[in-house]
Image (tube, rainbow, N blue to C red):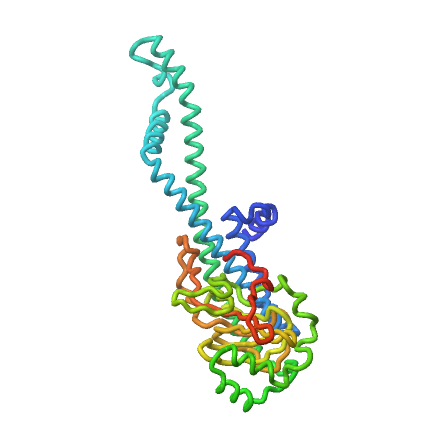
Length: 374
């Protein structure tokens, strides 16, 4: 079965974006690959990096599988609407085909008016039969597609449940590996007293970020990885999700924040979009758990709304390093294989991203490769 799926995937790459069957099958293969990488991660020289990649692979596979389930469910709904709209026509077609199947051909050609009527009936039957046959073939193909879609949905829902369980295991192992690690590179050791004074005296994020940038640790190159401006348009979002609000857009309550709001799945992995020094890690005002990254001496990126934090102030992180997990709790039982909403694809957590240049916030959007939502 897996070999068949591989053949379907690699022979149909061009149609993968539009064919719901290929999308679901390809996503199942992604989850299989993630499960394999989870097995090998235990023996990796850098377990944290290996498990970070594994969690990311699981999350990408789950997003793709939910997308495939949505497409399959939408196609199934469309077919059922076609059947409902043409129910009377389909009933007549089935009745005609059943009559033709039960009646011997010679009797079908007889007509009460005699040979002339029989001849006319033969001519009409010769014209009608191909049309009936064509409609019958179309109906058969649609019914077979409907059956296949239902089979794919059932199988994909099973894969989704296994994927959700797998990513939970990978996240737990990542948290353990991150807690056990003692060889993390540090650029400085944050003074807890100074940091607490800054926290207590700051009533806004702007005030805290401004005070943070004035601390002695911010002098010099933050990461040693070049000019941050060179990364314009090349960064990936730190979490797998969908952008809810852009820079300076008001939310439903009318609150305006100078940053991006990303909707995510519960417990989604948050990674560093660039190499940087962690300037702050912890709770901050009403932003929840916050990590502030310093890629160079003129920029700070605030990433707020995490549930679990991995990094600590002074730590140097590479691009793609795990920073923590979103809050909430994934519901392994909330999987409906026949939902047009993508089998529990609702995103209940939000991540806030703010980029500051000097004293002022600036639009982070140009730095990121923002794709359409999954």
